[in-house]
Length: 290
Image (cartoon, rainbow, N blue to C red; front, side, top):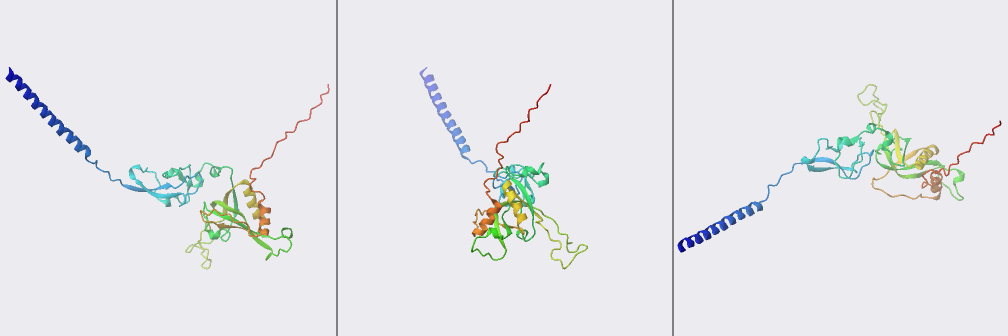
């Protein structure tokens, strides 16, 4: 009996040791497998157009508000815009948050908007004046640019103070600064292009794009009145193209400049017309005779 008991004890010990060894082998194998790095996926990148900043509806796409970025092609929708050239002449059809990919549905021509008024910022107006190559900075002005507006005004006696002796009878005055250009009309000149019927070889404008027949600005209601008044009062209104990030507001160079500008602009801070309390007329009571 003692021999059988001892045999069982030895067998149990051997089985225990074998189990421990097998468990250790199993645990080591799992640890080794877990320690192996998972295979890294090589992403294929694709270039798309992305908003550099929030873009409001009606805004023109430019190099300053969109850019090309590389993203994994798995995340690129089929309708994504992949070239800046695809956005030439197009505006935002929807509000576009910063870093959003530009889709074809988000870009379109102004005529594709349901209403022209949909592109006007709240509290603003669109006002248009006629321009030519000289007044439009040689047609370098593009949609979305900012300009200063300058007029040539006649110097009348009531504008001058004693001892003031201006040169000439007119003065150029900057009457509005940092005005946003909403649209510059593009069109073909009437002169035929080279090779076309009726070509005039001596005409330097033959076939030249006449981008600047009219200029439309985004302004406040008061500024719109100032621009129209200046166009009527001055010989011509000129646009001085500003650098896109120039926030400088230049003071008038002389008191005469300031008086002419003041007469034009008045108080531009009071852009909202307040009619005050409205008095409703009361109809006179009719005397009834029986």
